[in-house]
Length: 117
Length: 113
View 1 (cartoon, rainbow over the protein chains, first blue to last red):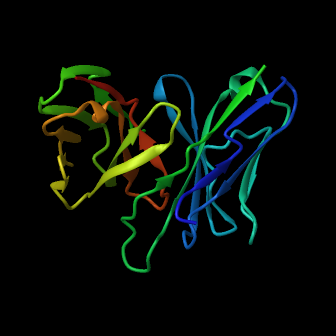
View 2 (cartoon, rainbow over the protein chains, first blue to last red):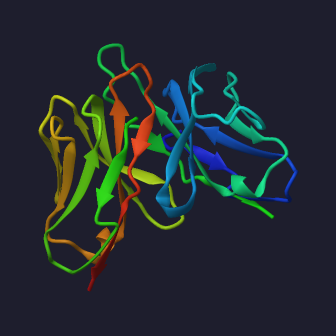
């Protein structure tokens, strides 16, 4: 598609439950990024993929968070045993990286608002 | 560690005014800088991307400048309109193999009719 599609728009979970978020990147984009936006517009990078391979996972919490980008499927971000502090808006972005030069913008989806009660 | 700061945090102006939003970053080793707009409950819309070798980029009423050596970028909005009301974020991509963006905390703009 022409837009990054994230589902669901809103997700409510009780503390300790599992949460799974999905992202379909723009067709032809080989890089996918996940960011977490908490209070006061603070964006935190979580993880990126090059096709189905993890590219950079330096922002991922060591425990409870995992992500995948499998061929012919939306990418996913999963949080096990959710905590109150996981409440945030999770954004997915995708980017096209040509062979020569990689000054391409990242295109963002509308985000998934995760509320942990 | 790269830190990105945006000043002011909030700005309210009457319609028609020209305005400047500021973004500063602590490490000048950036690959590019991107300005975004975020409307409430929405994702980010990319406005302008400036490569590290460029000084400015223009799109319609928007002009973004970059002074890499001093760690500063500005977003100039000409003849502001109520529809420009949104949060504006700048983000830098570092000069490393990672493509991740590091964001400022944004400037919340209100343009009053």
